[in-house]
Image 1: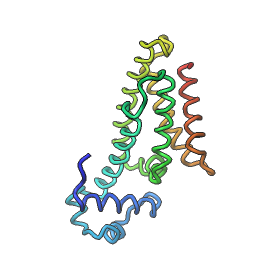
Image 2 (image 1 turned 45 degrees about the vertical axis):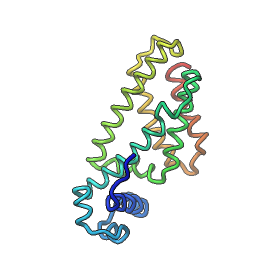
Image 3 (image 1 turned 90 degrees about the vertical axis):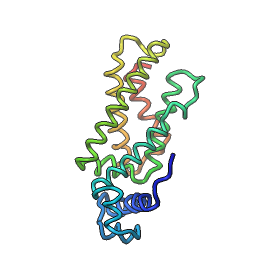
Image 4 (image 1 turned 135 degrees about the vertical axis):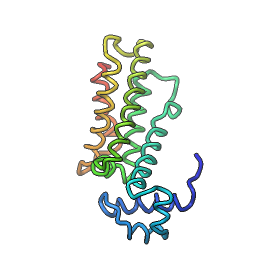
Length: 191
C-alpha cells in the first residue's frame, strides 16, 4: 500500500487520537495542536472536517477488508472451518482497533459515514452471498438456503453483533466473541 503524504497521515493519526480522547468528537483546535498542522492543511487534504472523518472510516474499513480477505485464510480446509477462521479475523480486527467501538456505535451516525457504511455493507453482503453460493456448489451448505438472503442476514448479524460485543462490560475475549458470532452464522446456515 502506498504511503500517504506526511501531512495527510499526520492529520489522520491526530484525528484518530482526538476521536478517542473526545469520545467520538474532533475539535479543530485540538486537531491542529496535536497534528502540528494548520486548518489549511486539513482543507487541502480532506476538504472539510467531514472529509477527514470519511478518510478515518475508509482507512478502518480497508483494514477490515484486508483482515478478512480470502488470501488470509487456508484454502485446504472445509468451508465451515475457513469461515469460522474468517469470523475470528473479523472479531480480532475490531477488538484490536480502539476506534472500532466509536466508529460502529457513534461516528457511523454522521451522514457521510452512514453513506459509506451502507456501501461497504452492500459490498460485503454481495460477497457473502457469493461465498455461501460457492459453499452450496461445493456441497458444504444446504442448497435450499437462499444464498443472497443468508449473506445479508449474516453480514447484518456480524455488523450489529460486533458493535454490541464491543459495548459489553466486561468485554468478552476475542475467542469468546468470535465463537458467539460463529454460532449465529452456523445456525443460520444449519451447519
